[in-house]
Image (cartoon, rainbow over all chains, first blue to last red; front, side):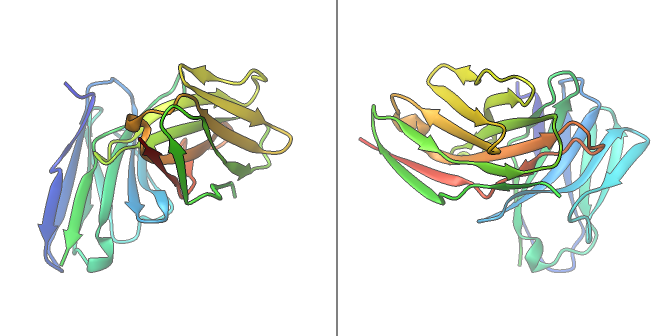
Length: 112
Length: 116
């Protein structure tokens, strides 16, 4: 079984809809991240969390919110989706001892 | 702010040959990590290799090795005996140890094609 899972894997929605992307991990890491990937831009940080009570904005947090329901679960929400939020979204965890990040399989979101 | 630059948007290599992907970075920190990630068409981000800046020895993982030049702020990836399965996007990433976020700063990627 995958250590970092994301649901859904693909989603098509309409402008103005509320969308939640979910991430779960079994690696036991306390640090979790949400990144966005756009063609030609690499990955950029949206939000990160060091534990359930510690959530922080990243480089491109506008239009997004997150919830850390438990150490193993970190959700990303788009309150009112817009077309320029069409992208590939990755969740990641970080091993604090090796400082290595492990990524989920990604969610491809299309906003029409 | 730290930046990572991959100057080769696309590269091509013949199967069984060797190819080198370039990466440079800009930072004022002295202690950090550098990574190469591979993203095949399945879009999964797969860790290829990791380098700690305080270690002078270049990291190696099977057919993958790096040339880490700290003074030049250069971190290139060499793939030996290229295989068809190596075809993918390759991302160079930086993580400063002094920062509180712990996130990775990525380059824009290099698309590698492998010709049979």
